[in-house]
Length: 371
Image (cartoon, rainbow, N blue to C red):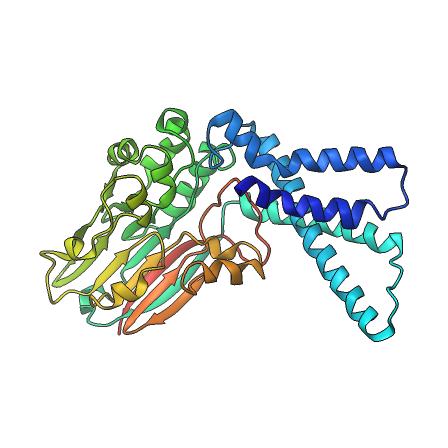
């Protein structure tokens, strides 16, 4: 069903874009076959690496697959829009308009250019996004406390060790008090990704690096990964909390496991357990990879929840669909009861659909202020 779903854009492009073109039949067949191969990117990934989530092709080939697969999806969307316009014209004039070939040529070029730009935006090291956030009950000694959120790095054949090193360098240059990573660090098994993720061991902040697992860790033997992360100087908050102290001020950073745990037999997210024993007078910041359970967190007196998972929706328009799958949360700040929720667009992106159009990646620095 998954692969059939990703074949639908190809069927639209072939039947509604390629067939009407005034080209020799063998050229149309050749183009259709080429695009068919591109549309089955995820199927080839499954055959070659055993998982659609970790394509193990050379990086240039991963980029090429994303280019053509992205162009197919964009072109299919354009063609559907063109067909809707033709239907509206028919409803008024009772005659279907003749679409000049030049219109389809322009659509094809636009789809390729947009896909190329989208990939370039997806794979670059993101710019720093600086945000000030008010935390009710924050002690004066913690006013101005700075923390950096990394999330959804998806270290893989696309987001390699070299890319990870550049992210580390830019993060360390911020000289933050704390670094938090809200899941989906990797795509691939520990044996394959060990060298690519190694640069993260160089992340430095005065109060260390705190991490929670995302859903993708559960696709690749989560127990091995959670056992490996501490060797990279990360502390795992798997239904646990950590107390930050500066002067007379205290701040609780709590973290939960991911909702995907319930499908793998791993430890499921337990916010009550994560908060057990936390000082009552200290505000709580929650790290939860997925934003879907924000209403539950708000009932526990959380001041701020930091999440990722959605990638911000990746493409304007598509973000509305992604929001529906995540209880309406997709990108930026939300007020959930008395709690603030921030959904990060992601530092990297799943290599299976690596396009960003109008939804930039983030390397996010938060400055906490008394609220």
